[in-house]
Structure formats: C-alpha cells, structure tokens
View 1 (cartoon, rainbow, N blue to C red):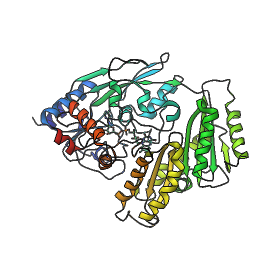
View 2 (view 1 turned 90 degrees about the vertical axis):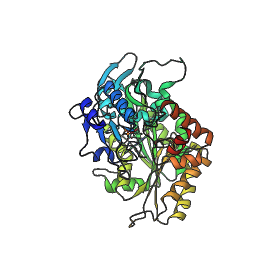
View 3 (view 1 turned 180 degrees about the vertical axis):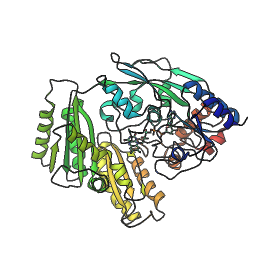
View 4 (view 1 turned 120 degrees about the vertical axis):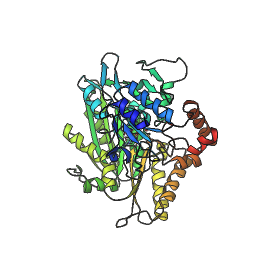
Length: 471
Ligand SMILES: Cc1cc2nc3c(=O)[nH]c(=O)nc-3n(C[C@H](O)[C@H](O)[C@H](O)COP(=O)(O)OP(=O)(O)OC[C@H]3O[C@@H](n4cnc5c(N)ncnc54)[C@H](O)[C@@H]3O)c2cc1C
C-alpha cells in the first residue's frame, strides 16, 4: 500500500482529501500554492498520531493547519507532494469549568465559536482579532497570537494553562493541566506557543477564561498626529490602567481604505485627522462609573487640545461599528491592490518617531507607496502595511528593500521585526540577518532535538539549510 492508501484507510471517508485542495494549499495572501500529496483531516488525537507515524515512516513532511489565516505562509507547504494536516474536524468544546475559569477544547475549534460557547456561561475568552471567524485555537497558540486585548490579558501564551501535543516521533504528550501554578521543570507548554507547527501538533488545549465584563465604555477619537496618540495612550494608562481592555490606533489612509472598500461602514465623527485612537475600558464590577470615567478622561484631553473630535459608543451596535473600522483594516487594504504586510513592534515611547521617520525613507525607495500605519498602541505593535502606488500593479521590484528598511529600523529601535504573526516561511531570511547566530542556533538545536528528521513544517522558523548542517 502507498502512504496515500494507508492514510485514506486510517482516516476513513472525508478524512483524506486529494482533490480540490486549493482552499488548503493556498495561503491567505495568495502568494504560495503547492499542491500537497493530500490533506489529512483527523478527528481524534489517536488519528493525528497515526498520520505522524505513517508520514515519519515514509519521511514525508507534514504542515499542520488551522484556519489557514497565517500572514507569513506558515500554514502551507513549501513544496508539492507533502501532507497538510488540517485540524478542521477536531472541533469539540469538551468542558467548561465556571469555578476555576478554564475551558478544554480540541485544537480545531474556531475562535468565534469558542467566544459564543463561553459567553453563554457568563465568561469570556479574551482573544480577539480580525481573523476570529476562521482562526483556530491550535493556530492561535502556534503563532502565539496577540490581538486587540494584549495590554489587559496578554498574548496567547498567557491564556494557555495546558496542552496535549502529538510529538514528531508520534508519541502524545498530555500536559492538559488547568493550573495557574506548575513549576515542575521547563515550561513545556510555552515551547509550543509560537512554534508554528515545527515541534509537534497541538491536539487539545486547556485555556484560561475571565469573567464577562459587566460594563464596557468605548470611544473613537480623532488626533492630529501620532505623537499625540502616544501621549494620550500614556495618560490613559497612568490614570485608568486596570480598566483598559483595548488601546488601538489607525491612520487616516487606513480609514479611507475601509470606508471605500468595506460595505456598510461609516465614520461616526465630524472631523478627519491624520490619526485615530480606539479606546475601550471594561470592568466586571457593576459599581464602577465606567462611562463617567471615560468621558471625564476625554474631556481633559479636549481641554488639553490633544483630541480634535471624538465620540463614545451609546450602545452595543455603535460599539461594534467602531470596532469594524479597526477590524476590517486588513481587508480594506487588501482590496486596494498588491500589498506588503509588516507586524513590527517598537518601545511605545518610540512609536510615533518611528512612523514619522519611516514615511520619508519608504517614499524615497518607492515614490507614491501608500503607507498605512495601524495597530496596537497599547503594546507598541505597528502594522506598517504598504500598498502599491495608485494606478500601479506592483512594487517595481522594491519589496525586499522596503521590508528590510522597516525591519532594520525596528530592530535598531530596540523593537522586533516580527511582533505578532511569527516568522512562517517568509521572514526566515530576515531572521538570519537580524537575530544573533546564538539565538538562531538555539532554535535549530531545539528543532533538531525534537524533530531529527525535519518533518514538522520544515522551512518554517528554522532555516532548512541550517537544519541540514546540524544533521
Ligand atoms: C484579517 C487578519 C487579521 C489578523 N489579525 C491578527 C492580530 O490582530 N494578531 C495576531 O497575532 N495575528 C493576527 N492575524 C494572523 C494570525 O497569525 C492568525 O490569525 C492566527 O493566529 C492563526 O490561526 P490559524 O488557525 O488560521 O492558523 P494557521 O494559519 O492555519 O497556522 C498558523 C501556524 O500555526 C501552525 N498550526 C496551526 N494549527 C496548528 C496545530 N494545531 N498544531 C501545531 N501547529 C499548528 C501552522 O502550521 C502555521 O505555522 C491576522 C490574520 C488575518 C488574516
């Protein structure tokens, strides 16, 4: 029997797909597409282990895949003839502990479905991002996703209590504990947070839940420059830190992309300014005067002339409309033509200077390039996304130069060239240039120790050539 026959036999009907795999093997940005040997769609941890075992015997690489929303081609194979292992049939929400505040899920649960399930019990899972209708728990853990509430609740690694993982040698590590405290050796679960499928396949997770906020107060404010956004953010943190659940910003160009390309979006303020800040406060206490707090802060900011215009959401539908302007930004920009995405971070105090310095540098490389700065003001994570000049089809061969300019400057500022989305396949050359050989070697050694045959998502995070040298 061939490997394909064995997989088809082990996984049953709909468990092994070889036709019509476009949806699985093309990446979200549409730049990578290598038809696989097939797509394995196991339903249980044992079936995942069987796929890993059979692939290992045949020395065929596996790319684990969640919702396939990776923005750095991490969820699709680099070559044809490899296996995609999709978690899309492992969708059980197994148990919710309302006392301890945790939930146990299979890795293929879509984030939006998890929100719905836990909210019906008066709890929240506080990870929110634009791709939440497709992104799965396993993918979010494997990219150590950030999202819109990092300031308050941390990144995905801070929301994981325990994991179950099928290792590259096909054994199952059951680390599904629900504990806040467990210092029995290395923090193994953290090893898999951000590992992008290179060290094993996450099959189940125990995640942390929080009480549902009883109140939320959300404002959208218009600001005359990025530096004032930074200062406003710092003032908000100084006075109301424990109430801030989101502190996001976006440029006027980004707003224009959304209003032009996304149906049913409307800007709620009178003035258009170079930058906007979306503030959300929340509390689980019914006693706190949250709206009064936010309004008083905004009043002070108007008095100081830091805010040009702004509005507070009067109800949930207005709040959702504000959030759509921010969440639809990747899609709004995608509809403007070819783009290059960057997700860098810099120390928050340097955020405005960084953007102001990058604009002329990038325009010098490509006249007319459209620069959209938006992202997470609260944690210094900027998506400095570039769109081709109006009327042009491509970046005139300047893509690498443009990205390198941004990445180098971010690292020089003490920031990171890869703050949120991971390295995937696309950022390995940058990692090789920007991070020390000690750091890269450490990652290669870890990879080699767990996956000596380099079969788990080869070419992601660890440079394949580096890996071959080590073998
Ligand atoms: C519109 C949009 C908005 C986004 N906004 C944000 C944002 O605000 N913050 C942010 O951090 N990211 C954001 N992202 C990118 C982010 O990486 C993904 O949305 C998400 O974390 C990936 O989940 P996924 O299930 O789609 O994983 P995939 O794309 O399928 O996979 C991502 C990586 O994880 C690996 N993987 C997937 N499942 C498993 C598993 N079970 N076990 C082991 N490895 C696995 C894959 O091999 C791949 O390397 C955004 C993406 C889009 C398209």
